[in-house]
Image (cartoon, rainbow, N blue to C red; front, side, top):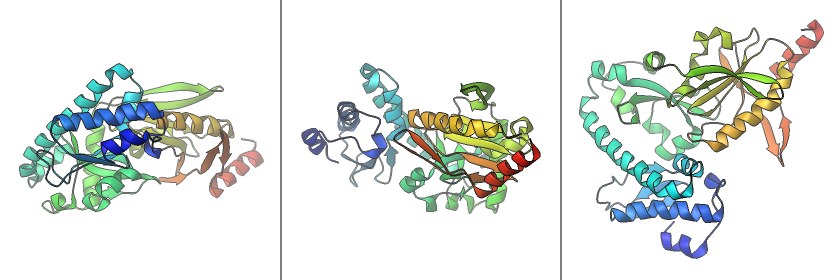
Length: 316
């Protein structure tokens, strides 16, 4: 959207920025335009993504900058700090782009790339921005994409199919290496928290962008998995919530866990998914629900309903 159109219409925030007031959204978008105008760059903002002109002076025309995480970060800080936050963010992206470009010449050497491989969880909407055909992905959780990435010193860059063409390795092998490398990173803080209403859940949390990836590493944390599996959510890149299922008490947990997950997802930054999943038999099953007018309607999977029935019959 051209800046003059926005300034003239003062229109309501789009869905991706619905947490902003009209005034705050206007302030945020103006700061984004101010940054690129200071660099004599022409941009267009579409669906929460900054797009560059084909005659861009510095930024590659194919480069896309998502705004959701930046917007969530601004929302959590005082408005007087927004300009510094926005300008620092895009300065960092530019530095990241330069370092990533320098790395390109080393990719063919698998022994150099090996220790840089990692697996990161991204929301489906991120794939719509960068193009799934440009990534190596797995679908482990509905609405979430497990993506093979390079964990570089100043950035995270997806592994492209043409990168892997040099290595003669299957996607399965590469994901195994990437997950093993995540395990070598500093472990997130793991704690039991009171989620409200007397409900205790396990929280994995930290500054790392790979905390949510621990959803794929649960087998290494048996205390997090009950005899009947575990309820799990990955609201942001910095958090994972789980509740081991041991008995009928799980019924009291579902409602609270859904609302806690939703709150964390909408607060961000790094929102991944508001979904709740049931992890059992080495697979993730979506636990459907809807929230309308603050009313929660839960539609548990048939297998989960059968499990609850078995608890009632056995007196568990």
